[in-house]
Image (cartoon, rainbow, N blue to C red):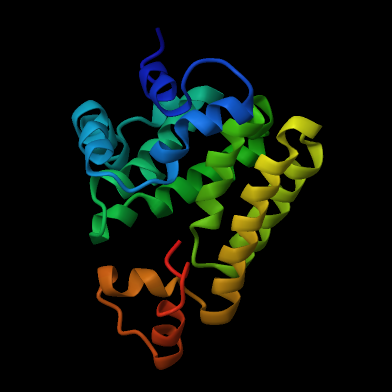
Amino acid sequence: MAPWQPLLDWWFGPSGSAEQRAAEKHRLWFGKRDEQDAEALARFGTLVEQALAGELQEWSADPRGWLANVLLLDQLPRMIHRDTPLAFAGDAQARALVEEGIRLGWDRQLSPLQRVFIYLVLEHAENPLQQARAVQLFAELAEAAGDAERQLFAGFLDYAQRHQQVIERFGRFPHRNEILGRASRADELRFLAEPGSRF
C-alpha cells in the first residue's frame, strides 16, 4: 500500500459517487468538531509535521501522493492547529505544490471530487489572481458535472465565488485577522458581524 493511501481513504471514504462521498464526509471536510481534530492529530499529525518540514516531496512524484501532500499542508493544519497561526503554516507550500501539479496536468488525473481539494488551496489564498483561478477551475468542474452531481459542484463553485468576493472587497479574509494578530478595519468589523462572514 502506498504510504499516502490511509490518508486518502480517511478523507474521501470508500468508493461511490461524488454525491455519496460528499454526503458521508461533509462534516469531516467542513465541520468544526473537536473529536475530528483530535483524530486528525492522532492519525496524521506526524505526517503533517513532515510535510511542513518538506520531508514528503517524493510523494509528489505521483498524482495521488501529490494530492495527499496537499491535504497535509492545507486541510489538516486547519484541523490540528485550528484557531492558531499554525493553521495556515502550510499554505504557501501548498500553493506552490498546486501550481506545479496543475502545470504538469496532474489534477486532470484525479477524480472531480479529489480535484476540489486541490483547487481549494487557491480559494484559501489572499490573492486576487489565485482567487480568479480558483473560480475558473471550479466553474470547469461544475460545467463538466453530470446531472446527479451538478448541484454538488455548483455549491463548490458558489463557495469559491463568495471567497473571491471577500478578497476583492478587503484584500484579505477578515476572519483570519484575530488569529494572525492583524488589526481589523472598521469595514471588516462590520462585515464580521454579518451572518456567514467567517466561512
